[in-house]
Image (cartoon, rainbow, N blue to C red; front, side, top):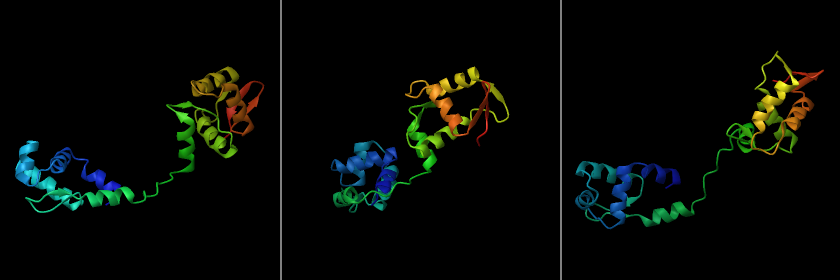
Amino acid sequence: MTTRTLAGALADDVRRRVFAAVVLGCADSAAVAERTGLSTRQVVTALRRLAEAGLVTGADGDLRVDADRFREAARAPAAPRAAGEPADRVLRTFLRDGALVALPAQRGRRRVLLTHLVESFEPGLRYPERAVDEMLRGWCEGGTADHVTLRRSLVDEGLLAREQGIYWRTGP
């Protein structure tokens, strides 16, 4: 049994109630129906699904939770998590609710983040420094980075160009 199977089997309210009744000692479908207030049909369907998932064993009249299967599931190594895209991980780490939490120290991660931020600038448009600062302040609210450092980083990375106080997007 995997944790996914366990979670799927217990995701339904009716199956959870039936499972709880079996845990509490109900050994047959009639006792489960009486304790839960569910119809016999609902109980029988839930018991079948719980048995298929390996959570309940025994015939009607001898229903019980398979505690050994639970122990196996608890001891089984967790399935490897999908790593996801590296860029997604960087953005999830350094952005919260649309605001920059901090500017990454590692250049590769910083580049990913800056590439994301520069998308707020329209390609081909020219922005005065005041407008750039205003846009970047919105990203910096509540974080440790300031808009001036962010602006300088965007220019240093070649994502924004600057000439006489006017900025434009050069990056992707």
